[in-house]
Length: 205
Image (tube, one colour):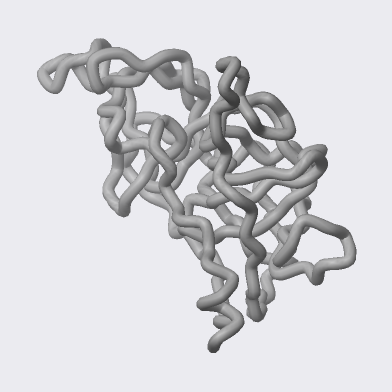
């Protein structure tokens, strides 16, 4: 078991051409810091069946992307309502990566590397990405580092994802559309971003 104590307090950025005003604030509840102890369960990795079907409860590939459906989503330390809540997300539409699943529950990885179980009803198809890092991100008129800058995106801001090609992604934020490097975004990686926790390692602590 390890302690997880997280909070978000993003500062506004001045002087931007155009910025999206919904920075990620995952674990703040009424302005108070949430500190929790986390002991996470493990589910076996997804595999492909011999007939080519995806051998997961949802018949969808794992890992895959989704986004939080509601403004309040409970994260638990196991795939059941009997498992305690480890923290609460207050950030609708934030992209998360599903790294394992049961029929009714999904083990997700959030932008801060937190791993927890949430009900599948609290997730929906991915439509958003999050700007990574601490630097502002230039949104350009085309998929080229020399293209004109249309807008500047704040760090850790949400944007709608249109498409990606040749290491660039077309996104929209606050009514502005532009291209940004794919590496600058959370929500487009094809490989698993977080490791599934080892329950034996957790139990031994």
